[in-house]
Length: 562
Image (cartoon, rainbow, N blue to C red; front, side):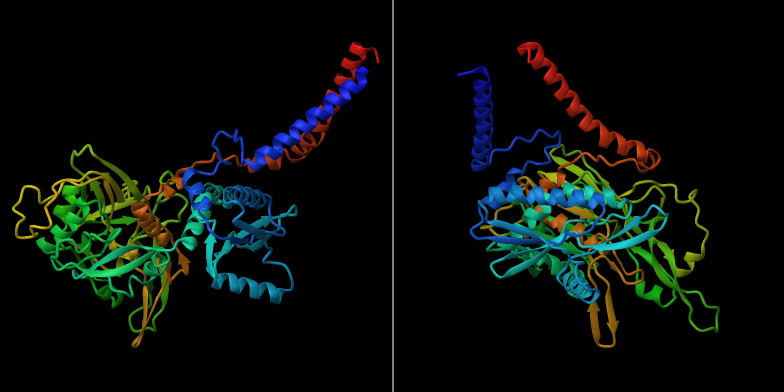
């Protein structure tokens, strides 16, 4: 065999080996992820969810058609993630991409309306052209998931007002696997965990909890429970929610909740420190902010949290309608900043708050962690902005305060915490007390908990949705929706993530902790060196290939003389 034939044969064998290796790796789902942040690797919890599918899930993604470059990159990432999930699911995951903007304007309007009704949230993207003009494009960065005659919407992007569109898309990319796996798990599960909302102490009513109940109802069976001092009445629930109690808790009820926690129960507390009657404000009257007498402060203090008897004000706030008409004139309402309604900042380094929008609060207090229990890990979840102030109770509140001069010299407190996550082993506040009057012989007292977790928020209104009352009819709004500005804040996402984190046993929420490095282009540099960048990227790659080819030819001529 000549040298030339041996070289051709070696090349063919090498090519065949590569093809065989690729086929085997494809059959065995072998992948080598060399990226620093492991962005192409499906997490172990996500893998378990898709591997256990018993039927086909069909995902229709509405990311197709003409779109900006950064959205195209996001679309490519969605496709890559779906391909990986499809591989681990043994092809029980199927998908397609659709363009919701194709067709006539009438058809496009009908499609947009249908997607909105099904729960997909549009994203408006501003595009600039070379002549300095601008246009807006509406997109739906989400999907509809179908499984056994059930359909579920999933929104990939949770818009954060502080971030650009590119940064929001990057955050969505970091949470992409969680959103997909969470939707797949939710639509394919056969049973639901149970959670309880405590009643009997002036907690929020059904209308005020309608928004979060609708969202939680997709994941959990929800019960309203009156404790009435019955030991063990809460033990069947995965989590318990205390939503803005205004009346005094008895020691018997506190004991029942404590022993639920000691047995590993998870609790979300939304508790006010100061009570302010908004009904008086709406009538133009002055109201007093008085300390709430719910009798929970000592119990929370024992667990490691103190809700201070004060009210947080912030220059980063939402607005209220105020009548600015002179006396005797017809009403003239306008929107004015109301510093008592701060927009709280959710940190980006926690799975509960990553990527969600600002959270609207109403008269929150400042929260502190206390105690020296080394077995409890404490993590703050919501903060004020860098321009805040604190007013101690009792205090006077009147809508005329919107006209007061606001200066940063007065609002000189920064990043005051309003919510905290506690994880670990808690000591019972009843451990040094006689408890025989609270319990039964068949329900033994436990002085120290097993490992568990709780979230404490010093504002009950964070979980409360507004209610529109017209005569005898009431119409609740979605949680986080501001009817004055018609903007939806991140309250629903925060509460949902908080409850999901408390009940998560599979580690699925930890997927939200994944961090992908942002590699966004510097727009000022790209605009200044536009032509240079194009030439470098267009000419250098083929030049390198030609140079390598020339060197290879020279090498062969020297070695073989031909």
